Structure formats: structure tokens, C-alpha cells
Length: 231
Ligand SMILES: [Zn+2]
Image (cartoon, rainbow, N blue to C red; front, side, top):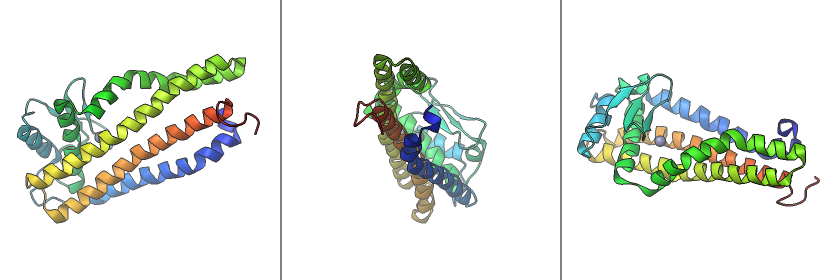
């Protein structure tokens, strides 16, 4: 139903192109700076461990995981997991990503508000992203506006979650860059590469948020809650 609705594609086309561009950009900038070795020779894992220690978080393990750009901080288990390309590599891209993940661990330890809010919203947002579509679809099919509204409300939580993710991600990258520079891990020319990789990564989160907002707009237009119902 939504998949063949021209209104949906009309709204989504620019977001879709932006998402494609962002995902291309993050891969290309990572691959570019994955070829540039840092002067210090430190690997992503070593940088993460050093930053954690400097912040009194030496108890947080830094582990290797599988996948490409699968790096993350797990707030439940309090563990940093780095992808194979980041964990053992001394490239600028690896160090940038590793430092970014420690940024999340520090946010968590310091009780950074946006991250705390994001963690609180995560379970509901996950339910929303899985079931909102089905509820809205069922509502349209049965002609039950109440169901459509419940689905849209649930999807609004997904949008809010994507929006609160933005300051969390930007802040983790800002922390990463500040620490890499102030701890003397990277020189100022090396920081340029790190900035490019982290900025590109941030764009993928902007694309995800834009996609959620536009989808919500589509639901609101289609349900007649916003504007006219018959177009
Ligand atoms: Zn992040």
C-alpha cells in the first residue's frame, strides 16, 4: 500500500538520495583514511584503552567484534566493541572511530542527559519502528482512525529517538576530537582526516532522522491529520 503510493515516493525521494550519499560518503572517507597510518602507530584498541584510562574508566573492556563499521559502545554491558578494521589498525580512520566510541562510554559514565534520554527511549522506539507501520496499515485497511492515530503516536517516538540521537552522536565526536588533540595522540594535520571520517558518520544519523521525519509527515498527510486527505 505505502510502497506504491506516489505521495510517499515524492516525499521520500530526496531523503533517499541523501541517505545514499551519506552512506557512500562514510564508506569512502573511512576507506580513504584507513590507508593513512597515524604517526604514533597506536591502534584503535590502544587509543580506546588509553582514553578510557585517562577518564578513570579503565575497567571498561575494549573488545573486537565482526562486521564493517559495526563499532559501538554497549551501555547495557558497559563494553566497547570495535570492528576488525578499527581494533587492530593504526590508521587515522580507526583511531577516530575508536575515540568516538569512547566518547559514548564517557557520556554514559558522566550521565550526559541526551544519552540517558536516548537509552530510556530505546525500547519503546524499537517497538515503534517494528510495529507502527503494521498498526497504521491495519488502521487504514479497517478504516479505523483510532488505530491509525495510535500507530502515528508510536511512530512519533521513533522520530523523537532519531532526533535525540543527533546531539549524542555529535557530542561523542566532539569529545573524541578534543581528547585526541589534548592527549597528544594525533597531530593537528592528522586531525583533519579524523574530522572528515567523523563528520561523514554523523551525516548518516542526520539521514536517518530526516527519513523518520518525512515518513511521519507522510503518515500525517495520508491520514488527513495534516492537510487534505484526498490528493
Ligand atoms: Zn556514535
